[in-house]
Image 1: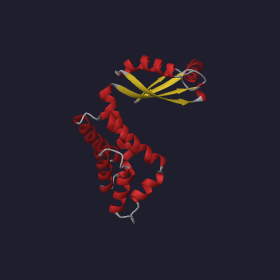
Image 2: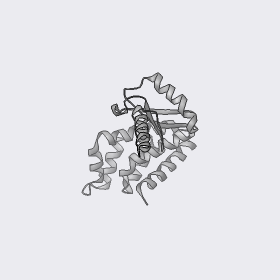
Image 3: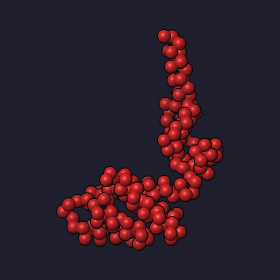
Image 4: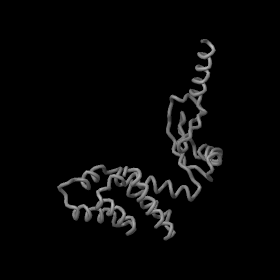
Length: 181
């Protein structure tokens, strides 16, 4: 089974458990911490996948590193470790976030713009586009891309809304070339 499929299964199981316990948000916050720890310390993955370190030592290390988190999250990380699937932890967190956002009516969106967006601009974009994708709101991450010249390009899932000047110029350019032939 592919790693993304396995990550989805673990995320779904964890999400179902969180739903039963009415801890969706708390679980997401804790999983975010796990993801950040792995992202900020890539050596951790090296240690946890090293063949010469015993599984008992790895478990002890994980238990100590994540002692502040709920037993459910700790158990999930330990389970991934025991089953030699610790490398899917980031993908699992991403899948959990997706499931939690679906329940809340939220979608993640990436907005490319020439300059950083203000909070008001992000809010306006969220209000304008959330309903177009059947959501209540959008979690917007902003990426500055000077090549757009002006306007914005928005990615929500596999949909792209391109209102950038560079895109409009490209369309005009293609139109002129088509008429020239």
